Image 1 (cartoon, rainbow, N blue to C red):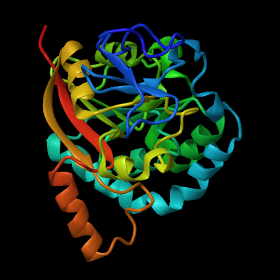
Image 2 (image 1 turned 180 degrees about the vertical axis):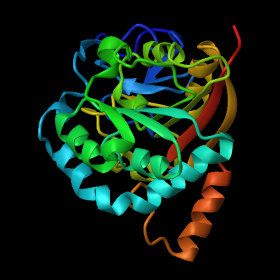
Image 3 (image 1 turned 180 degrees about the horizontal axis):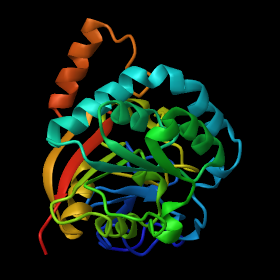
Length: 278
Protein backbone atom coordinates (compact mmCIF):
# COMPACT_ATOMS: atom_id res chain seq x y z
CA UNK A 1 0.00 0.00 0.00
CA UNK A 2 1.19 3.51 -0.75
CA UNK A 3 2.22 5.64 2.16
CA UNK A 4 -0.64 7.94 3.22
CA UNK A 5 1.65 10.92 3.65
CA UNK A 6 5.15 11.54 2.26
CA UNK A 7 6.35 12.64 5.72
CA UNK A 8 4.88 9.63 7.55
CA UNK A 9 6.94 6.61 8.70
CA UNK A 10 7.28 3.82 6.13
CA UNK A 11 6.01 1.19 8.54
CA UNK A 12 4.30 0.69 11.89
CA UNK A 13 6.74 1.20 14.82
CA UNK A 14 5.26 -1.84 16.61
CA UNK A 15 4.53 -4.56 14.03
CA UNK A 16 6.49 -3.09 11.08
CA UNK A 17 3.54 -3.52 8.74
CA UNK A 18 3.32 -1.15 5.78
CA UNK A 19 -0.47 -1.37 5.85
CA UNK A 20 -0.96 2.12 7.26
CA UNK A 21 -3.82 4.52 6.74
CA UNK A 22 -4.57 8.19 7.34
CA UNK A 23 -7.97 9.80 7.53
CA UNK A 24 -11.35 8.21 8.08
CA UNK A 25 -14.45 9.20 10.01
CA UNK A 26 -12.97 8.30 13.42
CA UNK A 27 -9.38 9.37 12.75
CA UNK A 28 -7.42 11.60 15.11
CA UNK A 29 -5.85 14.77 13.64
CA UNK A 30 -2.18 14.30 12.82
CA UNK A 31 -2.28 10.54 13.47
CA UNK A 32 -2.14 7.54 11.18
CA UNK A 33 -3.34 4.00 11.90
CA UNK A 34 -1.76 0.62 11.36
CA UNK A 35 -4.33 -1.64 9.73
CA UNK A 36 -2.48 -4.73 10.94
CA UNK A 37 -2.11 -4.21 14.71
CA UNK A 38 -4.37 -1.20 15.31
CA UNK A 39 -1.73 1.21 16.62
CA UNK A 40 -2.48 4.92 16.14
CA UNK A 41 0.61 7.11 15.98
CA UNK A 42 1.74 10.56 14.98
CA UNK A 43 2.56 10.81 11.31
CA UNK A 44 5.69 12.83 12.18
CA UNK A 45 6.87 10.16 14.62
CA UNK A 46 10.32 9.90 13.03
CA UNK A 47 11.02 13.55 13.85
CA UNK A 48 10.24 13.29 17.58
CA UNK A 49 13.43 13.47 19.63
CA UNK A 50 12.24 14.17 23.18
CA UNK A 51 8.59 13.14 23.62
CA UNK A 52 8.65 13.64 27.39
CA UNK A 53 10.37 17.01 27.49
CA UNK A 54 7.20 18.55 28.94
CA UNK A 55 7.80 16.62 32.20
CA UNK A 56 11.34 17.89 32.62
CA UNK A 57 10.09 21.38 33.44
CA UNK A 58 7.53 22.78 35.83
CA UNK A 59 4.89 22.54 33.10
CA UNK A 60 1.10 22.68 33.35
CA UNK A 61 0.99 18.88 32.99
CA UNK A 62 3.35 18.44 35.93
CA UNK A 63 1.40 20.92 38.05
CA UNK A 64 -1.86 19.16 37.18
CA UNK A 65 -0.50 15.82 38.37
CA UNK A 66 0.73 17.32 41.63
CA UNK A 67 -2.56 19.13 42.28
CA UNK A 68 -4.63 16.01 41.51
CA UNK A 69 -2.55 13.69 43.70
CA UNK A 70 -4.77 14.03 46.83
CA UNK A 71 -7.78 13.06 44.67
CA UNK A 72 -6.21 9.78 43.54
CA UNK A 73 -6.36 7.82 46.82
CA UNK A 74 -9.31 5.69 45.74
CA UNK A 75 -7.70 5.10 42.36
CA UNK A 76 -4.46 3.89 43.95
CA UNK A 77 -6.34 1.48 46.21
CA UNK A 78 -8.19 0.07 43.20
CA UNK A 79 -4.97 -0.20 41.23
CA UNK A 80 -3.25 -2.05 44.08
CA UNK A 81 -6.23 -4.40 44.32
CA UNK A 82 -5.93 -5.17 40.60
CA UNK A 83 -2.22 -5.91 40.96
CA UNK A 84 -2.82 -8.23 43.89
CA UNK A 85 -5.59 -10.00 41.98
CA UNK A 86 -2.98 -11.42 39.58
CA UNK A 87 0.07 -11.58 41.89
CA UNK A 88 -0.39 -13.92 44.86
CA UNK A 89 2.67 -12.76 46.80
CA UNK A 90 4.21 -9.53 48.08
CA UNK A 91 7.78 -9.17 46.87
CA UNK A 92 10.12 -6.72 45.15
CA UNK A 93 8.27 -4.35 42.83
CA UNK A 94 9.49 -1.58 40.54
CA UNK A 95 7.23 1.10 39.11
CA UNK A 96 8.56 2.84 35.99
CA UNK A 97 7.17 6.36 35.71
CA UNK A 98 5.96 6.44 39.31
CA UNK A 99 4.90 10.10 39.19
CA UNK A 100 4.07 11.42 42.64
CA UNK A 101 4.51 7.98 44.20
CA UNK A 102 0.95 7.44 45.40
CA UNK A 103 0.64 3.88 44.09
CA UNK A 104 4.02 2.90 45.54
CA UNK A 105 2.98 4.34 48.91
CA UNK A 106 -0.21 2.25 48.84
CA UNK A 107 1.70 -0.91 47.91
CA UNK A 108 4.35 -0.25 50.57
CA UNK A 109 1.58 0.00 53.17
CA UNK A 110 0.49 -3.49 52.10
CA UNK A 111 3.91 -5.01 52.67
CA UNK A 112 5.56 -4.73 49.26
CA UNK A 113 9.26 -3.85 48.88
CA UNK A 114 9.00 -0.96 46.43
CA UNK A 115 11.19 1.15 44.16
CA UNK A 116 10.23 3.72 41.57
CA UNK A 117 11.77 5.45 38.57
CA UNK A 118 10.67 9.00 37.77
CA UNK A 119 12.59 11.38 35.47
CA UNK A 120 10.69 14.53 36.43
CA UNK A 121 12.55 16.34 39.24
CA UNK A 122 9.27 17.87 40.41
CA UNK A 123 7.26 14.64 40.52
CA UNK A 124 10.10 12.60 42.00
CA UNK A 125 10.46 15.12 44.83
CA UNK A 126 6.79 14.57 45.74
CA UNK A 127 7.28 10.81 45.45
CA UNK A 128 10.24 10.84 47.84
CA UNK A 129 8.13 12.65 50.44
CA UNK A 130 5.29 10.15 50.08
CA UNK A 131 7.52 7.08 50.24
CA UNK A 132 9.93 8.26 52.92
CA UNK A 133 12.10 5.38 54.14
CA UNK A 134 9.68 2.73 52.85
CA UNK A 135 11.22 2.60 49.37
CA UNK A 136 13.64 4.08 46.85
CA UNK A 137 12.95 6.63 44.11
CA UNK A 138 15.44 6.68 41.22
CA UNK A 139 15.53 10.10 39.56
CA UNK A 140 16.39 8.77 36.12
CA UNK A 141 14.98 8.43 32.62
CA UNK A 142 14.51 4.71 32.10
CA UNK A 143 14.83 4.98 28.32
CA UNK A 144 18.26 6.58 28.62
CA UNK A 145 19.96 3.75 30.50
CA UNK A 146 17.47 0.88 30.49
CA UNK A 147 17.34 0.77 34.27
CA UNK A 148 21.06 0.01 34.61
CA UNK A 149 21.14 2.16 37.76
CA UNK A 150 18.84 -0.34 39.48
CA UNK A 151 20.90 -2.88 41.39
CA UNK A 152 18.62 -5.92 41.33
CA UNK A 153 15.98 -7.81 39.43
CA UNK A 154 12.34 -7.43 40.40
CA UNK A 155 9.56 -9.95 40.74
CA UNK A 156 7.04 -7.42 39.44
CA UNK A 157 7.48 -4.39 37.18
CA UNK A 158 4.60 -2.01 36.55
CA UNK A 159 4.32 0.86 34.09
CA UNK A 160 1.07 2.79 34.47
CA UNK A 161 0.36 5.31 31.69
CA UNK A 162 3.89 5.09 30.28
CA UNK A 163 3.74 3.33 26.90
CA UNK A 164 1.81 6.12 25.20
CA UNK A 165 4.71 8.51 25.90
CA UNK A 166 7.34 6.40 24.12
CA UNK A 167 8.40 6.41 20.47
CA UNK A 168 10.19 3.03 20.73
CA UNK A 169 7.90 0.82 22.84
CA UNK A 170 9.48 -2.44 21.69
CA UNK A 171 12.85 -1.28 23.07
CA UNK A 172 11.19 -0.42 26.38
CA UNK A 173 9.56 -3.86 26.67
CA UNK A 174 12.85 -5.63 25.95
CA UNK A 175 14.64 -3.54 28.57
CA UNK A 176 11.97 -4.34 31.14
CA UNK A 177 12.24 -8.03 30.28
CA UNK A 178 15.92 -7.89 31.22
CA UNK A 179 14.99 -6.72 34.72
CA UNK A 180 12.61 -9.61 35.36
CA UNK A 181 13.47 -13.21 36.28
CA UNK A 182 11.83 -16.12 34.53
CA UNK A 183 8.12 -16.03 35.40
CA UNK A 184 8.42 -12.38 36.51
CA UNK A 185 5.27 -10.29 36.13
CA UNK A 186 4.86 -7.17 33.98
CA UNK A 187 1.78 -4.98 34.41
CA UNK A 188 0.95 -2.21 31.95
CA UNK A 189 -1.77 0.38 31.63
CA UNK A 190 -2.30 2.70 28.67
CA UNK A 191 -5.18 4.62 27.03
CA UNK A 192 -7.50 2.47 24.91
CA UNK A 193 -7.68 3.97 21.42
CA UNK A 194 -10.77 1.83 20.78
CA UNK A 195 -12.67 3.10 23.80
CA UNK A 196 -16.23 4.34 23.39
CA UNK A 197 -15.21 7.66 24.89
CA UNK A 198 -12.57 8.14 22.21
CA UNK A 199 -15.05 7.45 19.41
CA UNK A 200 -17.60 9.86 20.90
CA UNK A 201 -15.21 12.67 21.82
CA UNK A 202 -12.79 12.41 18.90
CA UNK A 203 -10.09 15.08 19.17
CA UNK A 204 -11.71 16.19 22.45
CA UNK A 205 -10.74 12.91 24.13
CA UNK A 206 -8.63 13.73 27.18
CA UNK A 207 -6.00 11.17 26.16
CA UNK A 208 -5.51 12.79 22.77
CA UNK A 209 -2.44 14.86 23.64
CA UNK A 210 -0.15 14.63 20.60
CA UNK A 211 2.75 16.41 22.33
CA UNK A 212 2.70 13.89 25.19
CA UNK A 213 1.10 10.77 23.68
CA UNK A 214 2.64 10.07 20.25
CA UNK A 215 1.38 6.46 20.28
CA UNK A 216 -2.07 5.15 21.20
CA UNK A 217 -2.78 1.43 21.57
CA UNK A 218 -5.53 -1.11 21.01
CA UNK A 219 -5.70 -4.47 22.79
CA UNK A 220 -4.44 -6.11 19.58
CA UNK A 221 -1.39 -3.82 19.57
CA UNK A 222 -0.50 -4.67 23.16
CA UNK A 223 -0.94 -8.38 22.61
CA UNK A 224 1.34 -8.22 19.57
CA UNK A 225 4.17 -6.30 21.22
CA UNK A 226 4.14 -8.39 24.41
CA UNK A 227 3.98 -11.84 22.83
CA UNK A 228 6.70 -10.82 20.37
CA UNK A 229 8.91 -9.90 23.35
CA UNK A 230 8.40 -13.31 24.97
CA UNK A 231 5.63 -12.58 27.46
CA UNK A 232 2.64 -14.79 28.14
CA UNK A 233 -0.64 -12.95 28.54
CA UNK A 234 -2.33 -13.50 31.92
CA UNK A 235 -5.09 -10.93 31.95
CA UNK A 236 -6.29 -8.04 29.81
CA UNK A 237 -9.26 -5.80 30.44
CA UNK A 238 -10.44 -2.24 30.05
CA UNK A 239 -11.11 0.26 32.83
CA UNK A 240 -13.52 3.15 32.56
CA UNK A 241 -13.12 6.68 33.86
CA UNK A 242 -9.91 8.40 34.88
CA UNK A 243 -7.76 8.39 38.02
CA UNK A 244 -9.58 11.43 39.38
CA UNK A 245 -13.02 10.14 38.38
CA UNK A 246 -12.48 7.11 40.61
CA UNK A 247 -13.75 9.29 43.46
CA UNK A 248 -17.48 9.71 43.94
CA UNK A 249 -18.83 7.58 41.11
CA UNK A 250 -22.57 7.08 41.39
CA UNK A 251 -24.03 3.59 41.47
CA UNK A 252 -25.65 4.23 38.08
CA UNK A 253 -22.36 5.33 36.53
CA UNK A 254 -20.52 2.34 37.98
CA UNK A 255 -23.12 0.09 36.40
CA UNK A 256 -22.70 1.71 32.99
CA UNK A 257 -18.93 1.46 33.24
CA UNK A 258 -19.13 -2.20 34.23
CA UNK A 259 -21.11 -2.97 31.08
CA UNK A 260 -18.71 -0.90 28.98
CA UNK A 261 -15.70 -2.73 30.38
CA UNK A 262 -17.32 -6.11 29.68
CA UNK A 263 -17.44 -5.05 26.02
CA UNK A 264 -13.77 -3.94 26.13
CA UNK A 265 -14.82 -0.36 25.46
CA UNK A 266 -13.41 1.23 28.61
CA UNK A 267 -11.13 4.24 28.51
CA UNK A 268 -7.97 2.42 29.56
CA UNK A 269 -6.30 -0.91 28.76
CA UNK A 270 -4.88 -2.87 31.70
CA UNK A 271 -2.76 -5.96 31.08
CA UNK A 272 -0.78 -8.41 33.20
CA UNK A 273 1.69 -10.81 31.60
CA UNK A 274 4.41 -13.24 32.64
CA UNK A 275 7.93 -13.55 31.27
CA UNK A 276 8.20 -16.90 29.56
CA UNK A 277 10.97 -19.39 30.27
CA UNK A 278 13.79 -19.14 27.74
